[in-house]
Image (tube, rainbow, N blue to C red; front, side):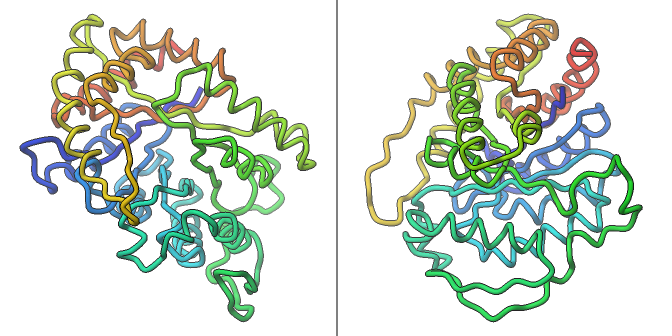
Length: 349
């Protein structure tokens, strides 16, 4: 089982943006100290839900601050970035970190970001598959050109090439060249998009185990229909996002989250603005916090370990990205990460 920390750089009420970013960096450093496998970094624009606007940039900082832990984006929002730019960043981080970087990509939402960055609504509603395929080609081929509806350019050399990492190319233990890529999936259509390309899914923390198991089953069916190799399907390496809060008893852990998260969710989710004025219903912050506490490892260490083990058994997913900053407090976040590494992970074997 591979357990990592999910970090949003969330700005809680009464906090400054620098405070949120400092807590994010410290949480990642604490995750390495505690023996976690990965940190996963979210990306948002113009909202206090998360104040990191570029997950790849923060990943670069953390890869330089750490020595062992994997660092991934969860996710880099593809419609607001040029696929070649993101591919170049991913290749650079892959090569300079010794292969510790994972690129997570997603479609994002119909937010005002599309207007600010000049992408337009079509980048979200129509062009994501074209952008994704161009990104994947950039990470896998030595030269790339484009002749699509959104991107058209002459063939150019890929520099730096992700497959140019130092090391023994004949090493049987070496993974595929280039950074691993995972894709956020929230709908059957996005599951099909990921499966057809053989990309592992990143499934959101709002989903329960039953829904995640259904999405994994759909992914496998679509991957088989697309002619994907059976071994690759079986070892896809999907990632399940969730929340973790550890305390000596479940009531104390739940209280830590129910005191802090509704205020953050209310101001963070409420700040999202759609690009075309469409109505977007906001989750009830209190009910959503209670839902997350019920779905995920929130409580004493033994309960948290049992929840993770049961989730892995029900869904077939053994990689986790767990939100560790739900208390909104730096010291409490660091302690939460420490207990996850020292009291929960040993119970998972």
